[in-house]
Image (cartoon, rainbow, N blue to C red; front, side, top):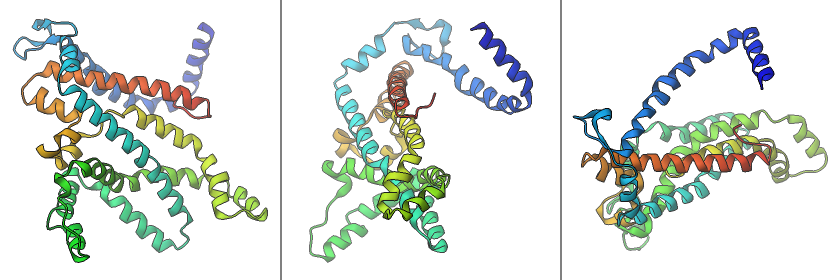
Amino acid sequence: MRSALVNGLKYIRTEWLLYLFLLPGLIYFVLFKYVPMYGVIIAFQDYSPFLGLTGSEFVGFKHFERFFTDDEFFTVFRNTLLISVYKLFWGFPAPIALALMLNEVRVNWFKRTAQTLFYIPHFFSWVIFGGIVINVLSGTGLVNNILVYFGFEPILFMGEKAYFRTILVATDIVKESGWASIIYLAAIAGVDSTLYEAARMDGAKKRHEIWHITLPSIRSTILILFVLQLGNILELGVQQVFMLYNPVVYEVGDIIDTYVYRVGLTEQKYSFATAVGLFQSTVGLILILISNRAARRYGGGLW
């Protein structure tokens, strides 16, 4: 252990200029990510802004118990878990499939135009993109106009519980899959082209090249991104749900983030909100550790 530490310090002293580039990033993470973590202590207090961290009373796991015994806990936890799994199942493969398709386009101007169109939604905030979705799916929107044109009855998509989770997953895929495909396109660009040439000489079809060369070559990239996404499985992004849901679909759309905002922050119950946030982070950390261990068996993983 000591010898490894000494060797490490010697290496850092030899390559000190490279490690100097790490310094701004390390300072950023220490100041803005790790130092504020002392604030999680209010999850175990009845925090009062007037008494501060040192003056507020410690109450142990009172706020965690309240969350787990709340009548709404099962509903928001079920909704969060279901929507997360749907997004993972449908949303994770979408950028991979998009990158594979874009990689096969040989007309450059068409490829650049398609990439631009797929990337643009990422730069819209959920306020703008959500407004577009609501207008398109409203009673007099584009989709209902098409349905009426072909003789169908209009559907109030945003007020139907049966459609809400599908709308959340589909809009998330449309908005983010283009941007997420950039990483996979970069990974595909690094695949040795001689492998494809050898495969073609052996009579391989395009689907064989994708299945036996491209996908195995970017396997480590896929595993790393999967591990990272699994760590955020309980964090769906409050902006999207806030923009699209309404009291009619609370039963299927209310997630932990919106529950924390509605119950914890608007009612100024900071300790309760922090306890729920700490629960989300703990679940995410456990999932990252488990999935990273599993990914290492297949040659991937974060560490």
